[in-house]
Image (cartoon, rainbow, N blue to C red):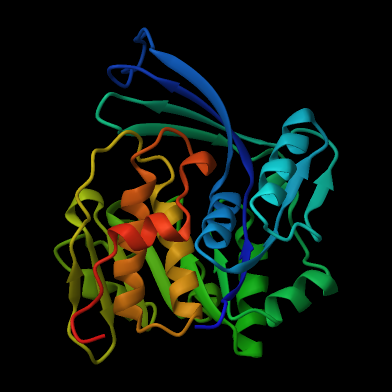
Length: 301
C-alpha cells in the first residue's frame, strides 16, 4: 500500500484546557479538577492526525510571533509534519479555551489570532496543494483561503475533503470543488436544514458526505448509492475534543491510500475512538497501530 500525500490547510491554536465535573452555565463558576495547555487547532490537529496515521503530510497555515507560536511549530514538526511553508505573522497565535466535563463533553471558544491573517496563498503553497493526493480543509481560517486552495486542488485533480467546522455557511464556489464533505449534526443542519434524519440531503451540495454522530457512529452517503451506517467503536471516553480531527485526518489517509470510501470511514471511526481515550487535542491523536487495533474492515473488502 503506497503512502498518502496529504496537504492540510487550516488553523493552529494553543488549547487552554480545564476539566471539571460539569460545564458552567452562564454566570456560574465550577471548581475544576485539572488544567493543561495543549497545541491544537483543527488544521494542525488534522495534519498531525494524518501524519500519525501514516501519511506524508504538509501543513499550510499561520502562527503568531508569540511563545505559543514557537510551541505550536515544535509540536507540528515533532509529529513529522512538513512545516516548510508555515507562516509567522506578527502578533498573537490562535487560542482555544476548552472546558471538559466528567462525561468527556466539551465547550470551546476560539480566538483566531494569526489564523485570520492566513490569506492569499503563495505560488509555493498552491504548488503543494496541486501535488497532493488529498487536500483537507476546515473553516477556522478565512473561507476565501479555503476556497482558493480547493479550487486549485480540483483543477489539478487533487481530491478535496472539507470538514465544514465550525458551523457556518459555505459559499457555492467552495462546495463545487468539494469531493467529500464531513460534518456533524449541527453543521449539517445549518447547511441543509436537516440532521441525522436525512443525511442524504447533503448530496444536494456535494457528491459524497459523511455525517458524524458521536456515539451514534456515522452515515456515509454518495450519489446513486445506498446510505451506509458505520457504527461507533465503543471505548471509555475521557475527552472528545479532537475526535473529529482524528476522524478526518485518518479518513484522508485511507482514501489517499486507495481504500474504498466506506472502508476509509470505518478506519476513521476507529481513529476517532482511539482519540477520545485521552485528555487533550494533539496529544490524544492516535498512531496507525492504535487505529488498526480498533478497526473492523468492511465485509468483503
